[in-house]
Amino acid sequence: MAATALENTKETIAMRVVDALRDDIITMALKPGDVISESDIAGRYGVSRQPVREAFIRLAQQGLLLIRPKRATVVKKISPLGVRQSRFIRESIEVEIIRRVAGQPSDDAADVLTKLIADQEAASEAGDSRRFHTLDELFHRTLARLAGVEYAWQLIDDHKMQLDRVRYLTLGVSSTQRAIAEHKQIVEAVAKADAAAAEMAMRAHLARAELLLNQTISDFPDFFE
Amino acid sequence: MAATALENTKETIAMRVVDALRDDIITMALKPGDVISESDIAGRYGVSRQPVREAFIRLAQQGLLLIRPKRATVVKKISPLGVRQSRFIRESIEVEIIRRVAGQPSDDAADVLTKLIADQEAASEAGDSRRFHTLDELFHRTLARLAGVEYAWQLIDDHKMQLDRVRYLTLGVSSTQRAIAEHKQIVEAVAKADAAAAEMAMRAHLARAELLLNQTISDFPDFFE
DNA sequence: AATGCCATTCTTGTATGGAAGGGCGGGTGA
DNA sequence: TCACCCGCCCTTCCATACAAGAATGGCATT
Image (cartoon, rainbow over all chains, first blue to last red; front, top):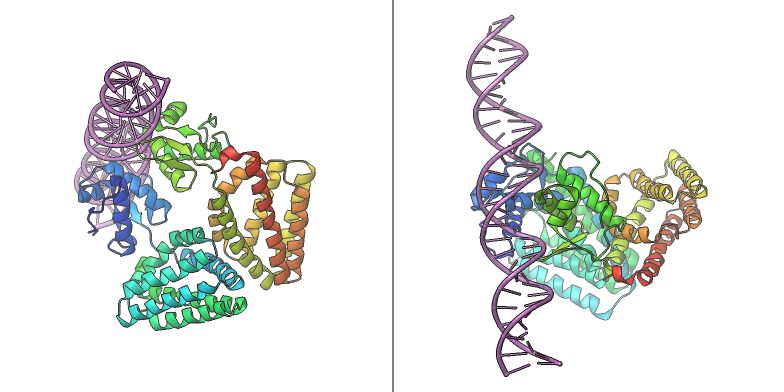
């Protein structure tokens, strides 16, 4: 049952519906496999079918919904294969990024990253896992910016939604301490301009997502294909 | 002026309009900067505005159109920055792919690739540049399949549309001979299971796109941002 | 009792009418 | 002559009505 209200003030109704539905899907208020219909959502939000329909189209292109012509629309189940290949894409790009950053070392790069890690430690000690997640994301996006390809992160972001659904199912489970230690290893390699070490550290860091995925599949088999 | 007819037989009108418009955009029948409207296209194809509107939404999400609320919709100009970063993404992924393929050499991998190159030579000698382009794409997709990440190619495909517009402007210019020689170098390295050499050959192969882009920008400045 | 058919009732797909907002040109005033 | 303002026209956006396919349940028939 979706609950997110349409209180934000985007330009069009369709955009508000997109945001509300995406939030409901990522936070599992709408579960993989749930069947929804245009008139259903329209009635729930007090709007007509038209903007809801357009929102469905957008979310379907983002891989969150499956529109079956003349049949009901369902919240897409999470595809383990898709998640793994998204991870492959992410690893490919992030490895290339970290090589670049370690290859052309700038003075303040390590400083900026070190400061971000300090914030992460603060969030971790405060037990604020939502904030930690945000900072973790910022850490990786900052690397992309330092490599001069922030645009590439937007791509990762698009494909990260699937993994975000997995992550939401395991909030609190992930060990923030370990992630922070791995971030430190990456920054150390960058500071020493050791591209090979940086690459290895990054691969190890991203490899943990695989474990998370396998754990989640066995915990919530109904949410996966 | 769009010309592609709606003769293909997809499920819905909206999908046919999507295909027709995308084809018109990639082949430059609709040029970057052209202004179009829902009723314009609807009248041209003899359908109502509704499916056209949905097609616009889909194409806008793919980065081919720019819908400006309450104002006209325009065919997006090509962003040199976007093309370069798409190339970065592609290089990151293809390098990772070629490493994998060279790393776990299978007997028939080199055979399959060699056969594809033979086809390319045939197409090149016949002067059939469209077919050569298709085979070139197949060569890269085959590499992805051999690495077990064919899904990743779909992603490259999505982002390749921008570059395809550039490529269409330079049909016949690109030297197929040189591309074939580079393909051969890649396959040789794969056959010898030399991952480093394969990576270098792939980077050199993809680097040529940069030259193509710069050439095209100076030839058709109006089509770029 | 079991099976096959048909109607009802969902769903999404399409068409069309009006509403709201932005751009542009003509007209008016200085 | 130049600048500003107002009205017209264009656009996308939203609402609603209708069409058509698909599934499901009941009913009739065997």
